[in-house]
Amino acid sequence: MRKTKVFTLLGGGLLLSLTAGAALAAAGQEGQEPQGRQATVRAASRAGFEIEIDPELDAQFGPRPVNAVQAAGIVTDSRPGARVLKVELDEEGGRAVWEVEAQDGGGDVEALVDAFTGQLVGQDAEDLDGDDRDGR
Image (cartoon, rainbow, N blue to C red; front, side, top):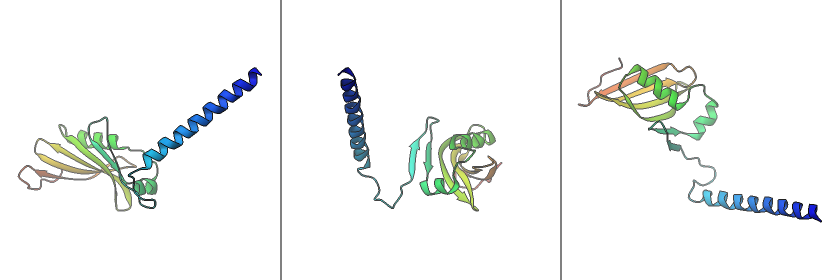
């Protein structure tokens, strides 16, 4: 008799958690893109900047040794005092790169960091007057 009560309680708890989980999952689906279309994932990171990852690019390139926060660090190491605003997964010449948008004392900086090697593969800077001042 005691075993029956224990199994009944365990079974009921399991059923309740599955039902609640399904309801929460269904509630989370409201307002999302229609099936077949994927939206870009955007999130504010603990590091204080926005991270944007396109799910299709994410799936195409798979796991990458260099993540968005590491890419931001690579750019700030190359430009001391720069503040990263946004990091976005992108493709350049068939390779996965992190496009890092930052600001330093002189203006806006956009840099590309290879998502597999961590190498800085390009950077462009624009001063506060709108004039180009290419990478240091």
